[in-house]
Structure formats: C-alpha cells, structure tokens
Image (cartoon, rainbow, N blue to C red; front, top):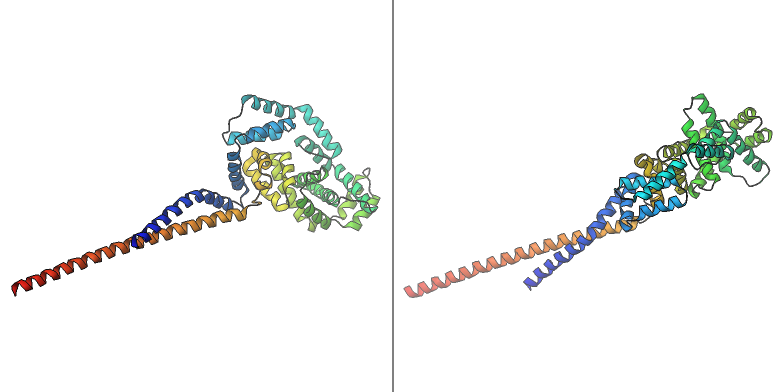
Length: 378
C-alpha cells in the first residue's frame, strides 16, 4: 500500500509535467497579450507573430491584392512590414511595387488628385487631401458644406449633422489657423479628414455616432439656420462671420482632440492610413490608440491594420479564452507542486519507517543477545 501511494504521486508528477508542457506556451502567449492590451504597438506585434505563423505567404498575397486594387501605398506598406520581419519577397514583385509607387507619386498624378480634392472636397491620398485642405483653408469647402447641409436642415430634409458640425468647427479653426500663423493647421487637416471619411462612407459607425453627438453640441442650430438663410458662397466674409457666431467654442474640445489624433496618424502612416483608422475606430479612444500605433510602426501601420483590423488597436475578443489558458496553467502548476509535495512526504515517510524498522530490529537482536548471554552465565 505504501509503494502504491508513492507510485500514484509519481504518476501525478508525470501527468502534470506533461500537461504543463502543453499548456505553458499558450499561457505564456496569453499572458503577453493581456499584458500588452493597453499598448497598441506591443499588442500588434504579438498579433502579427500569430498571424504570420499561421500563413507564411500572408504578406506576399496581400501585396498582390493591393497592386491588383491599384493601392500602391498599401502594397508599399506591406513591403516595409516584410523588410522589418525579414520576410523574403520575389524581386519582380518588389520591382512592380516600386513602379506603382513611382507612378502614384508622379507630378501629373499629384496635380490631378490635388484638383480633385480641391473641387470635390473628397480625399483619399496625400494629393487629394492637400487640395481638400487648401479648399477648407480658403473657407470655400466648409462654406459649401455648411450652406448645403444647413439648407437641408432649414427645409426639414435629411441632414448630415456630422458634416455640418465638422464644417462649422472647421471654419472656426481656420480662423484660429490664420491668427496663429498655422499653429492650428494640424487640427484643421484632421477635421477635414474626418469630414471626408464621412462623405465617402469610411467612418466607423461607433465613431460616426460619437462625432455626430459632439458636432450637435458645438452648433447653435437656430443661429446657424439664420446664418445659412442669409449666407452664400459668393459672400464668404459675411457668411463665415455669421456661421462662426453659431459655433460654441467651449464645447469643441473633444472634436479638437480627435482632429489632432487623426493628424498624428496621417503624419506617420499617410492619409490613407488615417482613413483606415477612421474606418475601424469605434470611438475617439480608438483613434488615439491608432495615433500611438502609427507613431511606433510608421509606414507599416496600414499593413498592420489591414491584417489585424481593430485588433491592431486593442484586444477585441478572446480575453476570456486567454484568461482560461492562464487559469489552466496555474491549476496544472498547482497540481504539479502538490504531486511533488506528496511524493516528497511519502518518500520521506517511507525512509523514516524503514529507518525505524531497522532500529527496532537492531534493538530486538541486542535484547535477544543479552538474554542469551544471561542464560549462558546462569
């Protein structure tokens, strides 16, 4: 029975050791992910490790898809990611990406996209954003948007209050930009990007809902309706003054922070990177996380967001499963330590029992010898 108990304890050690060897890697990964959940850069690196381990052709396939879609900027972002990860790419593929980037950055292409952004007010790359921002800085774009949406509002028609609020805020920020010799220009560019993302349907639903509420708070609707009724693109000075009066500066702090964060993303990952972050963001905190990610990853940001989606910014799911891995590893370790403790106690008890039995046998032999000597003497 004694050796059966020792054998069962040893079997417990073997079983727990084997199970711990299986669970430990998953638990270690789970712990690393949970520890990095508030650091977008570190979290994205861990998520990338897992994604690339599952598919070694993931980067190359995405480069091909980006080139096919005519998105040279995204293809170049994946090339940067491959270079950082020491992933080998075919020379012909690198050559095609280089040619596509060169064509996209050509003077004629830039001029065409700049004009498109200036006239239409829609931006999806650096050139068109430059045109859009130029139009907004000269108040043409914002007046156009305010007058259009304001008239819809006055006539009881469907109104995009988010575009209306952003354009109104943009006019006020533009005035500050001029007075501060460009100091508020980053906010101006950020608000323009948010407005453009809304127009082309690339603003996440959660972020759009939040921005819509914030935009309503910064606009005095009755005053704006009156300004729009009397305003015109042909009288920009008078129209801007009237619209600015309807803007509540004290309520604009959240929108201003959003504009700054969007600009931080655009500065490090490009205009399309900022658009991508606005598409996956569910609120201003996500955009702030995207800014931290872009500052850490630079040109790789678009590729990372393409592969991981919102998971590049925060732990969007699986936290319970990750916790279970840690809990399972803790239980297995507890079982291993308990089995070691039991084995040690039982081996010690067996050794003590054996030593005690030896002492008893020696004492018994000594007593028998003494009796024999006494009998012999008698």
